[in-house]
Image 1 (spheres, one colour):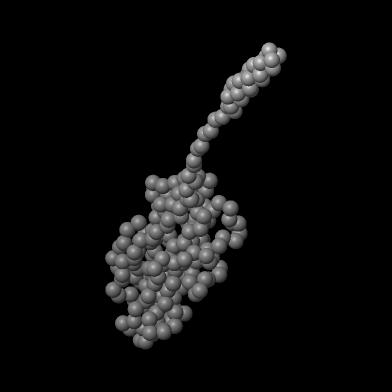
Image 2 (cartoon, rainbow, N blue to C red; image 1 turned 120 degrees about the vertical axis):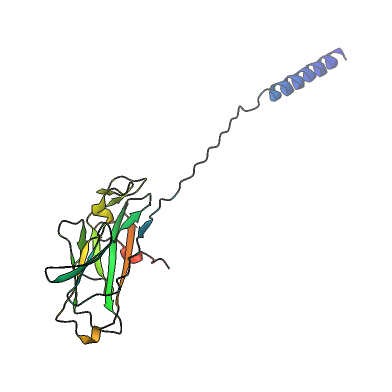
Length: 214
């Protein structure tokens, strides 16, 4: 009888020890969470509106890319106007930039009496091939963004007139502009396009993917 009580006491002690041991074997744990936001860069290019010219004459030239508009100037037997054509860039990404220029007479008159040429020494290079019948001026280098600085030009402070201004000359051939052109409008349209420079082949910039602003 005594031996049985002793065995029961020992068994009770073992159960108690097991319970205590189990209660003290909890795992040590810890946890920490962090979050990050990765914001896509921006490509944000603009172009100024051009002031209309009420009257142009056969033989006139129009100088685009001036720092300010000028009225009609006639000297040395030729008339000319100066018109401002400038771009702005507020994007954070460095970008390739080009400007498309469309020039055509209204009423379906021939535009063979129009010639367009670039300005020597300008970073805007007139391309040999037109796009959809439009002249193309490509910036000869990369335009830096506010968040990327690995290009050739920086417009952050708009202090580089040679990049901000897009210079070229339109000449109206006098001999090729007959009476049919009297009172007819010369319509010109200007579009600036920008494509991010990062991870883009400089020899195949996908300007064709740019969606025109509506």
